[in-house]
Length: 256
Image 1 (tube, rainbow, N blue to C red):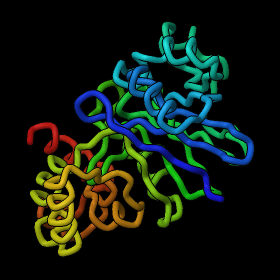
Image 2: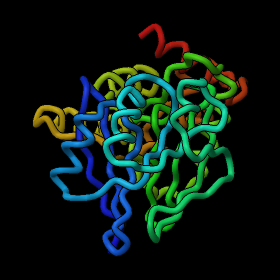
Image 3: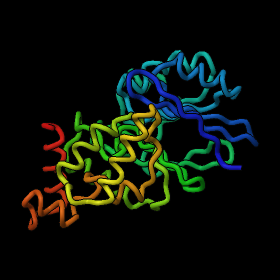
Image 4: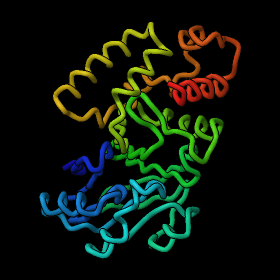
């Protein structure tokens, strides 16, 4: 039996996730931005929360952490190097290279600074699942609030090196806005054009675009493709480094 995943929306555009091993009964939450939403999802599934995996310190990811921890007595895993207010709630600080278990399932901790300095992603190789927080989105990547473009590009290279059949569970529904921008820097990409149409169809029906496959992102997400010749030609940056092209793409998105 595969690791079960319950996905649910909260706030304006966030997604929360519950992961459940039905053999051991272990259940993990990815982040805790809104305690009532997570508690409602737990009640709906009948699962008992045992773990909370925190991606980073932003309020829409941790505002409900204290309440959820108190209500469930779940053990909290989160970034070793983060703000003190979050450190006080973390039982098990983790960093790059660490591994943790949710029942029978192993998760690798990947540090992906850029959006924030403390950003973590959680990767389950056995179930081909990546919980990317605010690092990698459908057709996008996180805005650079604390890190810089060099940092983010190094982080995204770690993610695009994962197996392409990995499913990416990102923390926000940003696909429509990201799609409009992606077309602006990669207008000749037929796979991207087809994907944009599919995304519009999903959102017209109020359906989520998350998760997506890493294969899809590698083929259509401009933030993973600064080495693509068509993008480089469109940006007039044929002789520039991948990092320089990524930096330009990120700057254009900020102004878009």
